[in-house]
Length: 387
Image (cartoon, rainbow, N blue to C red):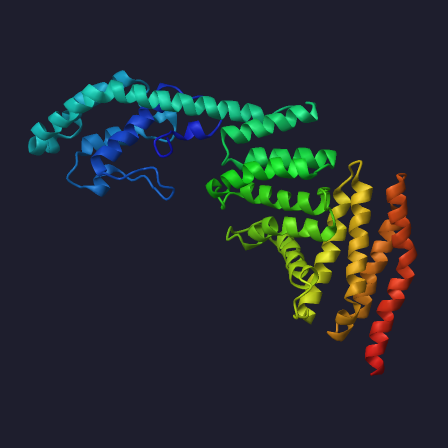
């Protein structure tokens, strides 16, 4: 149980009788102080700091039970029982003042100690078994068949839905194959939505999982509607949460924020055709920064479908700049900055090696429309100067 479990239970170290002694020590601490150790902000302090009238001898016994290092605890229950029976030798002044009361308490402790240890040991053993099974499920060999990997990660999520590591491994498996369609999206979201309230939002692994979920939707989603606008809108909530995280030194914040701004641009100015709002220069500047980052990031994908994925993105980004050419010019965004991104898209498109007919057609469309798009953008800027 959280708060009662020893540190080694949360890691990979072996638990033993000393782990049960730690749990008993925390139970005694709770009984004597009335302070529940389970809340996340709980900090252990000796019992006499909560109640100075308590026994110094008992304080030393409980502190030894709850030592962080198992080698500093009682090594077995016999040692603990002996000290509980001879607390007077550890605390003579308290013996004179409260001998009868404390003996009554310790008699009760002695009666229930075996029952307590048995119950706690059972809980710890169960938690240890679950943890061991979970670690095995998320640590399958890289050589394992893809379907078996997916099955293993989903089983781990069923076992411990609030641990983001299985979700992260699942996303990486999708990324390795380059395939993330409706089926994969549904199986990921079914587990994620069921457990999202239980995640620790301050965990770096959680932030990494959210960032990779956004990246998977943005660059790999190939569902029934796999247009770029659909992918960025599906990715947006994941990137937004990472960007808004209050975790210090968040390594994913800058990139996630850029993609979140891209998602907001699509939501505000592309998808909503009824909106009367016009993008500002700042909105366009942020858009261009996000587009440049997209072009850089998509290069890391090298799966079988990577070329088509890149071409779909190149086509969408080219169209976006072309569609907003008048707004870009009117708000004063540098012409060379806009055309520079178009030229980069053109170069990346030309260097892609493709053989599939659908990819070849898309590649040809991007290459053939490039000159027209550049000419149209230059005309928008020229018209503005000619007014």
